[in-house]
Image (cartoon, rainbow, N blue to C red):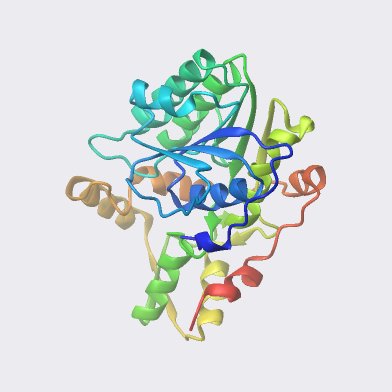
Length: 311
C-alpha cells in the first residue's frame, strides 16, 4: 500500500465530493491518495474495515460493504457528483462471480447513482473488452460498460492493460518465482504480448478525468509505451534482480488441466481457464492517444521497476 503520510491535502478550489468503489484494492489505494492531494472529499466503499488511510480533517468517509448491497451503496453515493467504479475480480468464487459482481453489480451502481443525483461515472474496465469476447471476464466487462454507457449519465471508461506497481500480483509473482526457483515456468510459447502500465501513471489520469471535458462519454485504451512478450518481461525482471534463470515451457494442455484442478480446489483459483483465454489473446493498444489528449508520457517498464524491485 502506498504510504499515507505522503498525502498533502490540496486546496478546496475545484474540490469535488466523490465516491470510490473498490478503493482499498491495489489500484484504488493509489487513486484515493491522488484524490486526497487534489482536495476532494471522498466516500470510500471497501470490503475491509480499515484500508489504512490517514484523513486528519475527515476528508474520507468509509463505508464497509459491497456494491451488491443497495443500502450501503446508496449511503456511499449520497451527495457525490462523481463515482469512480473500480470494483472487479480476476477469478470467481462461490459468492463473487463475473456475472453477479461485474455485470449485475455495475447495473446496481448505475441505478443507485441515478437515484442519488450523481453526474458522472468513471469506470475501470479492461483492455480486450469487446462484444463476443472469448473470455467470460471480458464478456461481463463489456456488459458492465453497456450499463454505464446507456445510463444517461456522463461517463469515461478506461481499459488498461496489465497494471503493475509495488503491490501488484503480476510482476511480483514473476519476481518471486525468479528468486525461489532455478527455472521460471512459462505457459505456452510466451510470445503473447502485454503492455504494462504503471499504477501511479494510470491513477494520475483517472483522478483528473472529471476536469477534462474532452473525456466526456469516451472510452480509452491504456497501456505503457512497450508492447512486450511475456518472455521479454521475465527477462527484464531477471536482469533487475541479477538472477540467471532458465525457462521451462508448460504446454497449454497441461496448463488447462492444472487450471481445471485448481478451480475445484481453491476459491479463488490461482489459475483459471478464463485467464488462459485472456493470456492467449494478449493485451496491447495504441498508447499515444491517451498520452496526447491527457498530456502525459508513460514510463518504460524497467524505469519504474528499478525504483522498488530489490535484488
